[in-house]
Image 1 (spheres, rainbow, N blue to C red):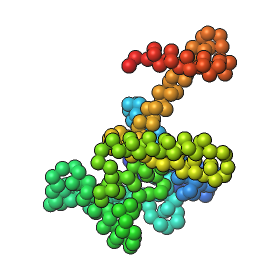
Image 2: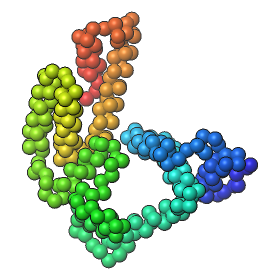
Image 3: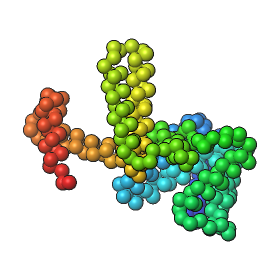
Image 4: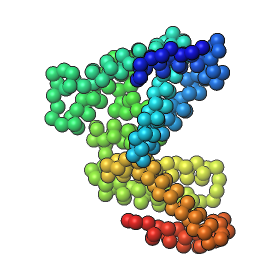
Length: 273
């Protein structure tokens, strides 16, 4: 069955393609087997690939990755339509209504002194929306999704608590707390291994990571971006080490740790600051 022609950029073409893929009569077996839970991991993965393309400054790749992410939205909407829950048009209407509702300073008569004041109002509108939807959780932490990557959720929880004054005034006490958490990790590492000790160690390392995220928040550093750059740096340097080892007729696994560390130092020293 041929797909109907459509003007370039027409979302209707993509909707028709997805409907055909999900058609029990001649559709794609893989697409037909999927449900919301099996597609969700792909949705998250595509969002990360969008972020990666942006981080690399690769606009052609960004175009492709945004298309892959849009496909995820269309896929979920098609499955919802099949169940009679909602369709793609309902998704579009919902986000349009939400954007207008949450920007009264653009689409209404409200005005704010600065972006910070607008953000406070944004959160107030979201809280009102949750209340109108029947949610009874009135905590400052209400609405922070458990589906977020944990580092991102940590930042959101900390930011929400900060809005009601539960926060350190600057980075100095955060750094002190970071040292405190490192010391507590050292204590558990020195203890005799046991299930109880392993549980305590996991808790302490979790506390350490939580405080590290808090330090990034206070320093106005994006945790995800910082970790991506650290990962890329490590990968670049390690691959350079492997290349040098190969050029010298050996392999990384054949080198002692001291030799590997010396090679790391050579690679690091050779990088342009």
